[in-house]
Image 1 (cartoon, rainbow, N blue to C red):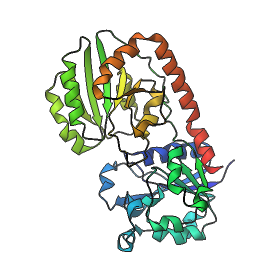
Image 2: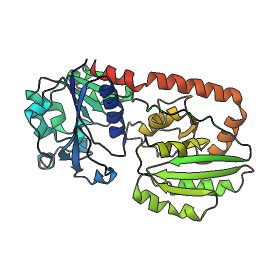
Image 3: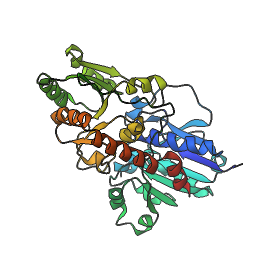
Image 4: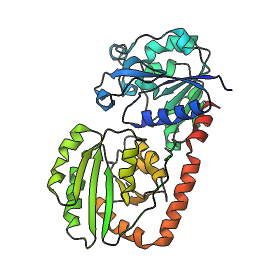
Length: 356
């Protein structure tokens, strides 16, 4: 039996990619009989805490620190000193591996002495290809640095010490546990589930306008986890064939799965952010549900190819969905691509690569 110990510093029960990544790999480690401890923030100073989901306390999960969610952009000592650590002892870090999910969202200044005294292998998971200005990141002991894509590596190109420790290991996929319901396409109605964390008012207004020109009946439902976005988009309640839901459910919630299986397509609406090198954790979260995902052709989805249907303008989705439904060969190509993608991003494979 494996008695190795892993400590993961990450946000927990939070609606973002950091939590999704940590949850997927920690579940694998537990299944492999590793002893896993999670150290999470009790708050984020930069008001990001609204994304936390209030749940019952879980075993081996301890809230021990506060800091800025976007701690990579700060250089001022006065700001970097605001992070706090409570109830953390050296024996808590007597383990084989310490994994830091987005290390700059932890109070590194306070944690560095703990890490230096720990015998554990320190592994950093970098969630964005954004330049890291926080000086304590470069002072923190690190044995391995994980990035998700090739273009993330560029942020360390001028640091020979870190570039030699950098390894590209992609984001893992969530695997649906229950039997996947087959897609039922209907010539008369196409149901599309929209996921967004952004104010997509303009895009929705375009869809509403173009919807009147369609011979096929389209039904849209918007899911968002953010209250302010729900409020901004609530005007769709007055529009026929549109619905909006504020959903703060975990991605492994069975009720949510059943809702998702009732749709023909998923639609992601992400704005292009040219200054940031990022990925969409949502795609990895939902690709295994075997529903065609419509994604914008922008930097969030650079590494995504035939596993998704890419659009340039939001109104293109009407043509693209009808074309996909009528083209059986294209559906087969998509399904094979999705299967290969899931195999490449299998969470067990990813989790083992991280610590090996």
